[in-house]
Length: 220
Image 1 (cartoon, rainbow, N blue to C red):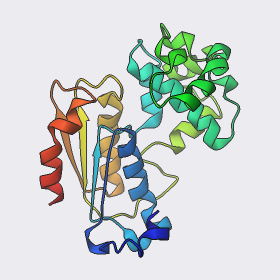
Image 2 (cartoon, rainbow, N blue to C red):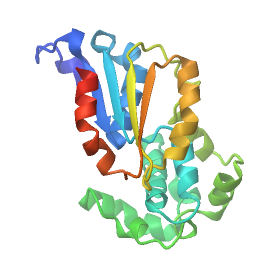
Image 3 (cartoon, rainbow, N blue to C red):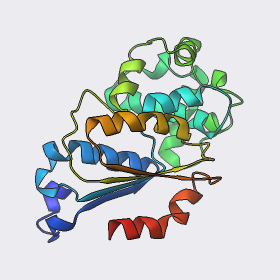
């Protein structure tokens, strides 16, 4: 949108901030990563990402463990990755999931019984993929696809300069904080100027709201 409509919208290029929560936070971080290539004239002066999945492979690995909201999220991530990269999802997801999930996604933006109602990751994911996720072994094409969507990344060099405010929620069961915490040293090594705020005892939905004024103050 920015390259195509920014001029018409009279955007002040000196005051652009990329700001997103949850999956929007993931998009915010990726947009900052790609900005020098796809929108160099609209590079941000700051980036706010609240409760985002950062390490997508780590996120899916977390969902492959004990049943939690991250388990359903892992199945959705795999299905959408297959759609984006035009891969066959049958080597990742169980047939009964693939029989129902596409129609559920077409008719609703939330609440997908085929994944939300699963008793365990074993009911959603193919056993070969589960074994690879639980042991760290490669299982292509999924290992490659998940790593290419993760940060830090060797595939797209980081050349941004905007500081980043990263907010996580200690009690987050949808986007567990473990993979994000482990990704932070790699992000800093790539050159990110990063401030991390971890909200003690707070879940995925509440952390962005409880820190809203802090986010605004940081942007200002």
